[in-house]
Length: 184
Image 1 (cartoon, rainbow, N blue to C red):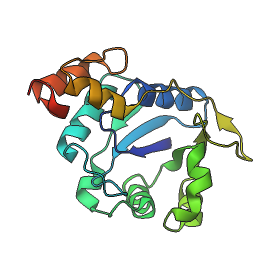
Image 2 (cartoon, rainbow, N blue to C red; image 1 turned 135 degrees about the horizontal axis):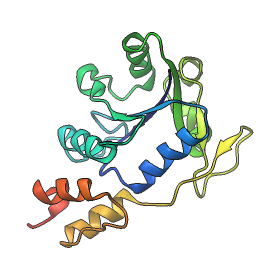
Image 3 (tube, rainbow, N blue to C red; image 1 turned 180 degrees about the horizontal axis):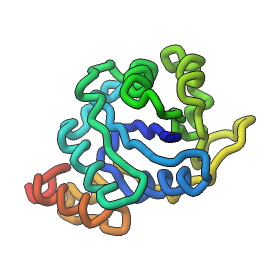
Image 4 (cartoon, rainbow, N blue to C red; image 1 turned 30 degrees about the horizontal axis):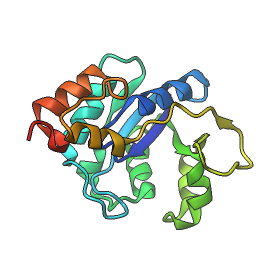
C-alpha cells in the first residue's frame, strides 16, 4: 500500500485539498491519501481547535474511496515535526510505503524543515505545482484550483458559506459549530 501523507492546517479543509488528493491518486503514484491535520501550527498561528479541523477533514473525505483523515498528531504532539510524524506512521503502517504530498513551494523551503533529508528518505515527496512558486528540478503534478482558507474564513465571518469552495459536509460542520465567527 502506497500512502500519500497530506499534512496541513486544514483551517478549514476545502475543495482545493480534495482536488490535490484526487490528482495524486489519479497519478498512480499512491494508492491512498491520508489527511493529517497538524496539532499546532508550525509558525505559531492559532487555527480552529484540532478536534474541529480533524472532524472537518473526516467530513471532507467521508465516503471517498482511498482517502482518510488521521488524528495521529493529537496522539504524538510532535511540535509540528514532519520527521516525527513519518516515523510514527512508519510504525503504524509497517507494510506501507509512505510518500509526502508537498507543494513545490516546500522544495524551496526544505532548508527550514527539521532534517528534511531524512523526511525525504522516509517519504519521498510527490511535488504538486503551487501557483506562484518557482519551478523545481523534479517532476510535478498539476496544481489543483486555487482556494484560500483565509478567504473562506473571511466569507464565513460575514455570515455567508462559500459552497463553491467547501463541501456540503464541511459547510454543515462550520455552521453547526459556529466556526470562524459564523452566526455570531
